[in-house]
Length: 300
Image (cartoon, rainbow, N blue to C red; front, side, top):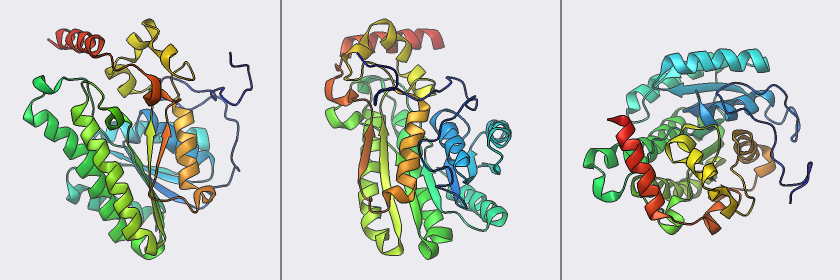
């Protein structure tokens, strides 16, 4: 069994979209000093914690999503906890014009953007046979096209001339063909491929491009939608090598690594941060179908 203080012990976290009460620095406190990060989907979940950890390490941030009220409330929390500037902006990653407007506003405020975290995503459990054409397209539009749209706009407006880092949040769903996840699995697999292509093409511009694939992460909308609570009840997590879900701070630390000078020679790769989940977790089709059916009943 893992002992307190061991290499597998998770850092403190909170399940809600609130800042950490205590934070211990595992990286140099000023490792991102003077940098500016643009984070899509930064108002909640993993994006919120990434913004917080970046800001605690000297970075100013822009958090952007369709819900301006959510990111505005999140920005207030982040600024109060870290003392760094956080600019909330509204955009739809499926609509390039809204991205251009948001980036222009961010550059007007900060004069530069050094780091892009493509975190905006959509997901839910659904068997392929019940998945509507529009539902499949919507996930592809948000995850795959959205990642390309934001990356291209940032490249043209900021990164091409000054270099920088892009981190795409993906998933391990396509590695084995996860049940009830054909929409998200294909979308994220495409983003991993995009990561490699962009790393090759944009490397000469001093731009590093990497993906990060989280496993089951507590305190996120995805964890709730994809059956996290049921997984805990059914002892599903015991099948993972580390016997637990991850937390948002662990993912934020991994994104921090990829965005920082510590990863200066890392590009075109996917960092899997899942406690070994994809290696051992059962692809329990019937249990997932049961959970999907229960969620459908709740929504009616």
